[in-house]
Image (cartoon, rainbow, N blue to C red; front, side, top):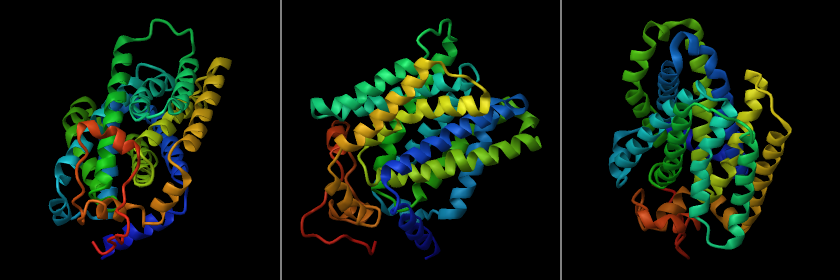
Length: 346
């Protein structure tokens, strides 16, 4: 009962905010945390900060949503989906924060963007749909500085790994949103990610994990860069298709560059500022060229659209799992059976 109250309360509040705004808030939180985390690298390293961040985030989300084993068992394929999401989160966090230790935050965020950018291209149906992606790609090239040389290969490889994991998480979390209500799946996924990152984090950080400054930074980063962003993203993915979500997250390079400037003192040249403007325009274009407003409004009216996902497949918590060739259908948005009422009594 309490979990359902939290679920309904969060959906009611988040439902009043346009889905693109939820995505942009999540992007800002993630990049702010990425800029704040290096302040604890001296004591615990990137691995230690990642482990504590995931540990604190997992504990907070589990206390907040109180995931139930019965709910995970009753939803077909829920366990596999949740564990896959947690594995991808662990890989993304480790790769991204290790990359920030070798490359400027703006460069890492730019390379990471290639993951959602690939989703945006894969989900395109019309030539017009490619325009926001192409505009964002031009912005990415400008944000890269256009003159950087001798970038560490290990940093580039880690950033590329983060891009792959983030793209996979976008698709898997979209599937998770159709199976579980609220943040139950997200809580278990982050707890699983913390467990996976524990051996690496403890081995690399050792007693540095107990440093008060490290604990404080990790706790703040867990809230602003994990709990809030991923909860907001999960709600947004219930209301917009992965293709639009992917293009909206093209603001990650811009947010990374801005927070790198504000927090880390990394200055931008004029080409990078032009890149920020380009990716911002791409996000706006994606919003208007994406699914029609009527479709988004219809989904928004169904308590976070979870019920429409379920009723479309004839069961409560048993939506059909998307197959590898279904990315175009995922990009088309949620389906709804005409004349069938939403099943709010799951």
